[in-house]
Image 1 (cartoon, rainbow, N blue to C red):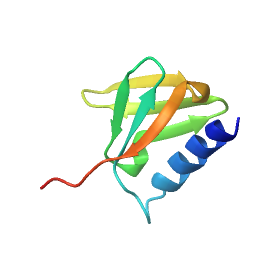
Image 2: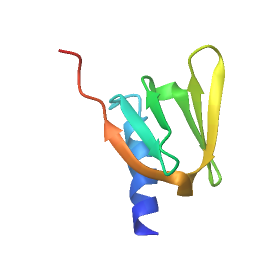
Image 3: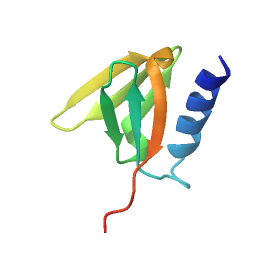
Length: 75
């Protein structure tokens, strides 16, 4: 449960427009969702919605998140 709280809190901090840093959400299934802007993520109840390119989206439970990785800046 603590790990889930850590992932949720980390995502909330990372999407703050004043402190935004690109990151990737990694799910238990192995799916990876890159977040490149602060308005790309919505957290509602126990769900997370990530707006993806080409007007699509991914929706998954917060409990499916196994890792939140900061994206390295382009060289």
